[in-house]
Image (cartoon, rainbow, N blue to C red; front, side, top):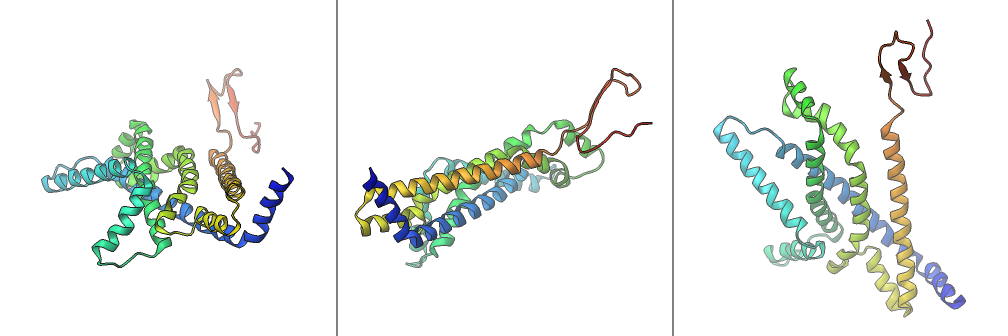
Length: 260
């Protein structure tokens, strides 16, 4: 047992440059892909929930866009990311006569498109969950669909879907490992190099497993803190009449209620 931990420490001390580079590329691809996927999800969510226009041509374009988005979501949610990586990377090389995309931008593109398909459904569900009365109230004061989304709906949606976004981020940290099939030098790719150099397979992947756990656990804790901060302080709760001595009025602890 002592020899095993000695081997583990030796792997970390001798190959830490590879491990650090792998962690850097893994976090870069996962973070950028998650943010880009969220933006894709927000855009598709707004488009898919937009009321159909009364103008024939505009209505036709809306139906076409909705059909394209639906196909995109179904295809990328229904196929593995590893297969998507192979199709996109080598498909580009096939279409351009042998030219290849840069590896890291390719990984970011693949993760972004894949994440966007899941985010599209998450955002759509978040928009649908907003009370219809808010849409009707915004329409009554003359706000357009885009203004309603920007100022009323999306701020609520972003707060409500934050746990799902955090979950997608954690998934992306782990799923970047499949990108080694096209040669992206993320953490799992460097684990293969270390294994071939040290001839210590189990010890190498044990170290990598611990690193993945540390990354995902740290990200989960940080995003949980952000989620708690977004909830804000306890809101005012007024029950009954303020003139009634039995009325309950609660305010945040940081504030004081002025006494007349």
